[in-house]
Image 1: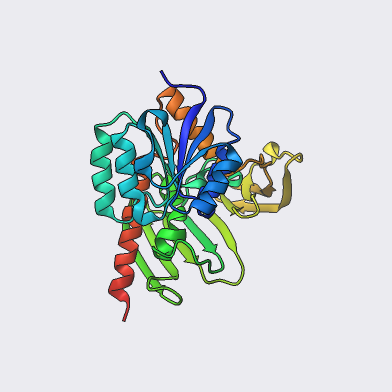
Image 2: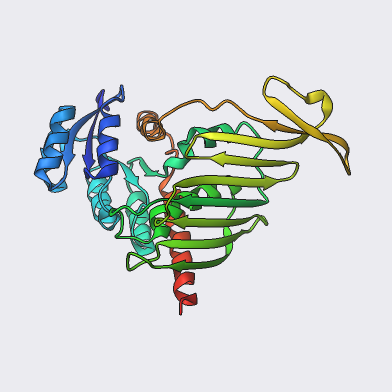
Length: 331
């Protein structure tokens, strides 16, 4: 019988771990029981803020006093921390990327297969309110273009920009297309770190969709934009601003002035069609708080995680293939 509220340990108190801790403390069916980090000053202050106990290492956690963990430590530690969580039968939320390597991901999958714990991977863009609004429409992409650009920050540099930033969009592409990647072309450049800091990849999917993806962590201005081209429509999603515009061809009788702006009429092979811009309402929500809520719900109901371990592993697998292509083409 699960206690109420669920007792969580947050592992890692860097930028993301701190956000997770503060938001988790506001979840109605969860409490932050422990904060885990060797930095006693920073982690101790955060633990005091949310009424939790600070411990320096996960091995110090009392196994019977924890129901679930959020792993927000550096990627290189994810695999070892997740193994400990699974062995203790703690439900496990693992920030992206789920592991540093494909081999670690496969080993984790094998260990998880014999357990009853819920594992959710932190691909937060699935919970972006603009992405949620996109699903008001049929999504059958033929071509997708994505730009994810940010200024350099001296964190998460234990992995390349592919694992750090592009992996968000790799997961989105796999989810939106519902297909597998059959071909990869990519190039990347290392500027400030030993691994690529800017990368462009072209992914071809088994269903014929093609995606062009750019990620940079050395850009002057931030950008998180997704553009989807499909039959009779084009979607422009600004994941940073949380907005979406949908340009569509519709039959005149279905025009709705309450949320559509007419741009004109065009003759197609199917007859005359109106060109309209849909600006659907986007319901405000904190994407991290929402993914936490869904994780808690999965634990309570015994249902599959919103972003499964298999989803997280496939994103790592594609990211690794992109990195291999970059290494192959680099001079």
